[in-house]
Image 1 (cartoon, rainbow, N blue to C red):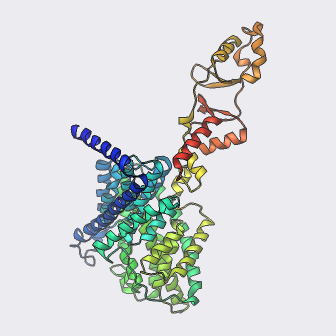
Image 2: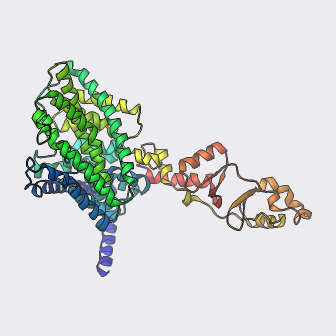
Image 3: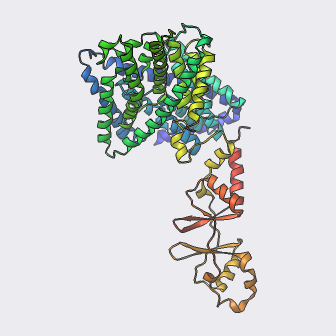
Length: 595
């Protein structure tokens, strides 16, 4: 207890010293550097952890001789993850990017301290033992949590806490892929951090810092590295257009199927049954289609190196690997079942994201399309470039992040020779899915509950406001059996022109408006004759304390009222006034402002 108190005093003095001696602008630059270092370091640790589990703990297994053991390894990894989350963390850490978006929208960008490490441990166990998910979402959540907690520690305002969340996310992506521009664009495009010069420089600092750290420790040994070997040929542009349409529709299936399978797993109430169901389904799928094991980056590299038939190695179909039609059927099955494998991993209790599965599905989709064209039409084009375009297309479709897809896939090639086809594929894929699905897989869950923040400043401000905090209770209450005399007494004590009529159990029976009964005030003969129930009326417009502020604003606009009654299940809670909403809106807008 004494140590905790002493630590708090030290931190308080440190914050006071910072405010007195370091300008806010310079401190933001310093903090963005620190966040970049820590998020880049976290990316390194997570990558090493996954490889340690995958290589060290499973190296004694001969895959060809004892392939059936891989039926159980993913389930064991999910079990360890579930036990860690249930009995150590005791909190939900799934859907990392959605958690960040929710924190920005509803939690003033504050993320719990344990998220600086918990998702790293959980995803290492899940992915290392074969879970068919990615490590990027957990590491983005880790980086964002580092930024959020450091900013909160130094008592920064909301806009700078949000900036540090973005810096952590940018550093995480940049560090894990050696792709600084992709880290920045991902933060701006997916996390919807406003593009502002005051914000862009700290994002650059964090992203570049994490990339330098990654280069220092790993060199080119990042998750993906694909030196471009085939130059772009303008005559193949129609293929990139076709891949864009294909990945657009595949992204639609990917998004809808993921949410569907997740809902089915959530319907299983018993956590042990969920684990067994998820682990069993995943084990069967990995047994039938080994490329579904883990993140899938090995399979992507196989396609990049033009060794696509090797995807059938160590599978039931290996003896037919030289038959292109069998390869096409297996590729089609992989594209269909990757979503189920991913959902079984997370639905069973594992931890991981959809970033790597999206890249995997994109690479397989691009390769599948051009392999089909080469086999059926004999066009004879190189297949690896189109796998790269497929990755960009799937990112544009699933994440609604076409720029992230373009810059990430361009950066991992070591150049921008594929920029035009990547731009074409991403744009077509994005336009295709937007015709059917307005929300990305990250935002769809939040959009359903109205908790999604956007670049629309008015909506962002309104969604950060809560009805419960704006309810006013200084209205004189009356009961239906009160008399006009009681009403006159209430008028003499009140500064309001509205009087709620409530029964003994708190249910609203009606209300009285001063302007409607002011003539009766000067009729003392009626004071004991007229009852309140004879004068009251039920409000035509009212709201619930659970309504969003967007709903409240719409009610004020359509009703032309200055006060709205707040009623929950018939019970009166108070009134919310147009003036109070406007005043709070201005204060919140100032809080959100980026100067």
